[in-house]
Length: 185
Image 1: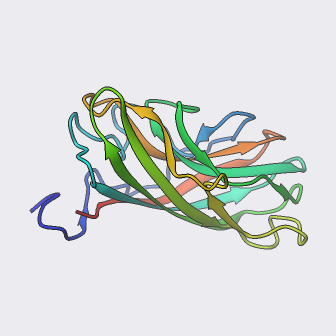
Image 2: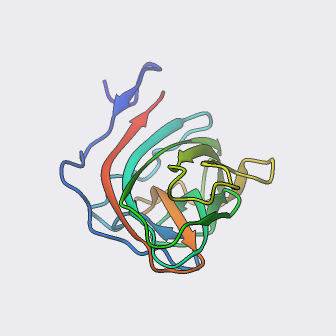
């Protein structure tokens, strides 16, 4: 039974091929194509207070110019939505890769309606060869201590849960090679 009796349920559609390459920019850039075919689009009125969804993804990441990487999770219809949580910025090594980056995140509904809220948290593991050895390789978010973020509209069917990155250099190439979304209850 989909989204029922408090057990995990993998949601469709399933990603069965690598997604297109994305170059994260200076604002939160979604790490796969968004839109009507996005595997993470949720139907209207999907959320209820306490509803939790888990997002897991694997990325092939090649760095370009040296600079900082910020990783996070967001909810919206496109890159850089209002509902967003970020890790701290960590310095990246220039012109290396590709490397595998693994990310997991959770979103729990705190309130519903046209001014609903989500609590989002998670982490991404970057290889030490991709980030400077003086930085951490585990990008955890949020960094501000609070997980309730700006409002969402739970009554529409145009928004998706997404992983995103902010890259000060804007020259990386990121390919989503695996993506699952699970209803946790």
